[in-house]
Length: 159
Image (cartoon, rainbow, N blue to C red):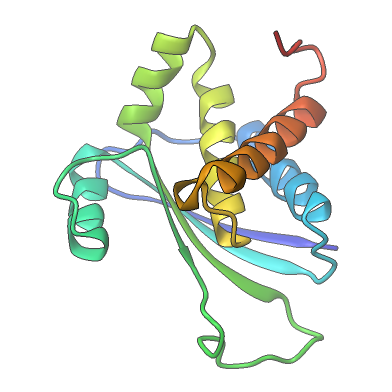
């Protein structure tokens, strides 16, 4: 399975390095494999700042406040072409690099590690997981997050 990751940056969002982009592709590959995705897949990733994500959060979720990550999954019928030889368009992930940097500092980890975590969280939402639906859904989604992080960062030990 190939992963096509279209990364864009707007406003005052922090830039990414080639090694971070490679790690994001690996995170997508790992997560999609664990979710049973076998087709080549395409994901759009937008890096923005507090103001940019607050605007999206207000317009699409009715919440006029910044957040750390948003996901916009492709809905059935949204795909213009469902040709199985083409990558499946999974949707868009938007990450707030301002919040990412703050959370990384608060959690005592690197900016890159927090960005990967937020990307995985958004990716699982694209795959239909939603921790806001109830306790069982939350446990399932967070267990998958931990499994993916564990494969990407095997040196981390879960307490």
